[in-house]
Amino acid sequence: MLAHGCTTVILAVTEFDFDFWRPNLPEIVKAAHQLGLKVLLDPWGIGKYFGGEQVSKFLQDNIENRQVSALTGEKLPYACFNTNSFRDYFQRFCLTLAREAGADGFFWDEPHYAFPKSYASIIGGVADERTCRCPVCMKRFQEYYGYEMPRIMNDDVKQFRWREALFILEDTSRKIKEIDPQQEITCCVHATLNSYYVTEYRGYDNWDMVASCPYFDVFSTTIIAWELPEAFFEQITRRTVEVSRRYGKKSERWLMGYYKQPQDFGQVDKVVDLYESLGVDRLAAWTYRGGYGTVLAALDALKLWDRIGENYKRVIKR
Ligand SMILES: [Zn+2]
Image 1: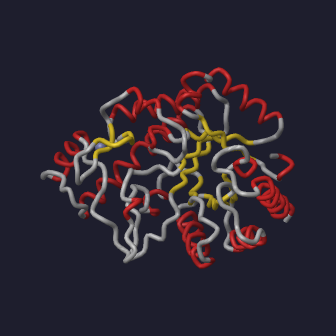
Image 2: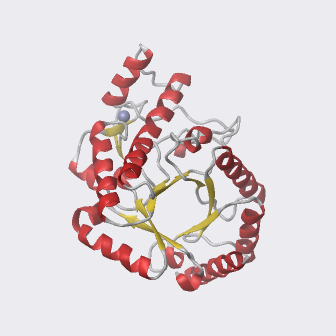
């Protein structure tokens, strides 16, 4: 990583790592620090609430406190982060690591409601499926708005989802900073245009609301696939920087360093130049060595990793 110009490592910590390998975590952090790398902890895929391919111990151990489909009423393999059960679980995970691990901060990695991601329609709207209509969300909605939570998304449901989704991260971030005020919190949300026609209602699509959280230090938007038009990269990046500056946060943009690579590796250089010219404060790539050795490796994983590394070194020199 150092040879590739990295200054920070995002250490993905799975639920199993926490449950089983926890004594090793401070040692890993110490080793990274000795090399001069800053360490951010990523509660990777926890409860399938964050992004990540790992399996969830919470879902294995709990048959309740799951997100529930609004249309069918089925329980889904996603923890409901509005329940006290999951909030306690998540907070214990993070606060224990804040006390023990000795890292420099936390990385909130694509937090989301289960739907409607896969239902975005070609003509611009989203289908009517959504989460969460679990008993806890239903009760809280009823108490606040005075009527039963509708199956179809309306403005009250949107507000409710945004507010509840932010609570768990805001509350946990605040408590982390009470333990150690130096801990740096990055919130990384999905890179969606959130235009008049298409908004991805996954709970964190109201960027102003997310970036205004006083306990977040860095506002980050996630990976864009290489084959998407340059204009998309530009619009997402411009808005990321604007929103970050509006609330006095650092901005972060990502490079896709796994799974799919650009047809022409020169695109990596171009996108890095674009990010830099638009004033992005921090660059990041997922994942180590282009995912080499995993099922999500890029075709030329090590070449992609090298090209990203050359770019890191190029911009750091400037
Ligand atoms: Zn719920």
